[in-house]
Length: 136
Image (cartoon, rainbow, N blue to C red; front, side, top):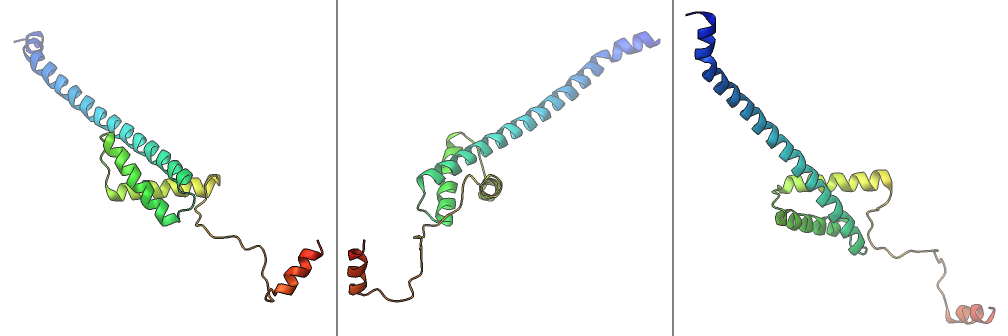
């Protein structure tokens, strides 16, 4: 048996092995691309959710905002068929909030606190109020 006959005899097996290897590589790359797209979609959903919570929850404290953001993001992700663990959701929310609040200054974690403009050292008495109204 010469070399040509040997190659012709082994060719079906070589092509089969090559097809299996290429299919495996394709499947692996497909899963990686899907993971990347899912992660991007998760980040986009969480970003939009944080913006939503910031808009509708102006009077909420930071912990209330985080709780609302996590609830809404988890709900939205489920509707898209994207699974996310509580740990991953918490990390992504915290990372996004830190990125936005820390770098851009567009959003600020705030709790509603009435603004105090000046400190009054002496108690106000009725006569002082009447005098200040009369002097205007």
